[in-house]
Image (cartoon, rainbow, N blue to C red; front, side):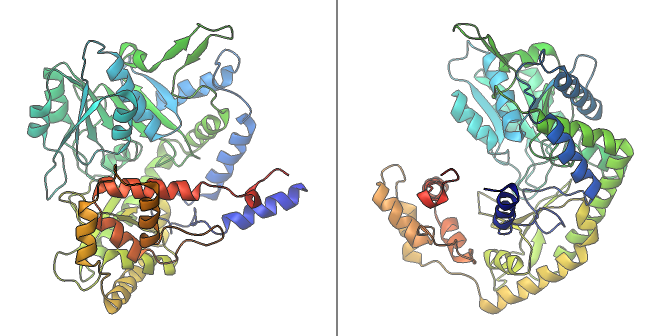
Length: 483
């Protein structure tokens, strides 16, 4: 096919996606609102996309850029002279490597465990699954959703190889009491990782703007590692994250080498071997261009938008903000009264008005809520967002809440996901409205589906949605790209 025709097809396919610019997608994407930043990132990405960070001696430019990014992140996040780091593909890989390094450092522990608050990112559960650790999940405060340092300390024992806290947690935007948790970990000689993937690049600037909150970075005694994503509030193209360790010895456990084969000696600093230089160069260019003052301006814009949206939510009848958010994320729930509407319908109504807000299912003390990731570009559209949110609540109240039949709830509660057959899962997908045919589009309104999924126990929900992924990733010959 002609190049222009192929690009036209890409544009046509992208037209069905949620918008990545303009502040209307309040999850997954991070928009500075500066067109020149996007252009710079794309051009730098293209310049280095063919280079391979697998071998820094062959591509020394990538080594220089990685060391520069690590140094910048360390300076921002309280690192000292001994601080070292690694650039990864994203927050999940950074968290995986933090867990792996802690696990490898304690080979004598037969049943290694990671202690984390129930609000910690699911990436740590993935790491435990992959690397054979036991998760010790500690309940958080049911009102603030902040980790309880005393309870975390009590959970640490001789099998604990890592303790985790969030700055902030993704679900509620709450910064945990890192100093108290780190002190408890240090008393037991256990590593302490701070997941600042979503907040690490913006919290230091918010502190300079007068936003108070707990200390969270490497300057806190007992914190041994911290992760920060540059494709979030550093506004770099995806996917780039930095994992910092307080010293070289702490980092060594996630390095891998193998000379026991006839090819080149494979040396890896990350889970990946081949690593495109594109994301690395793009991040390096954007960080150099924006600089300290640029990030301070963007943080000020973001803070303005967060405050305006929060005030608008709290002034809307039937809504409230969960917990005590201390960064740029908000979780919007109903106010606990018989509001006469459900948030899944509100999310659908917002989608009809051109906004994507992320539904979060009930879990423990956390009720159903809508997650909002607020970025700098929202400074220009927060009034419109609040107006559409209120209109969406009114529309949802008019249509009434989605109901799940009590008998169906009871059935879902009694199902064993590990005992269900593929045919039974297919039936559940069909009942949930998640079994599209080969040419069928996904439903435009997800409220009935989300209400049903919310009624399912978490393990069953996981299995149903994994089966759904299997349906999505099943190409037909019509979808083949090479004839």
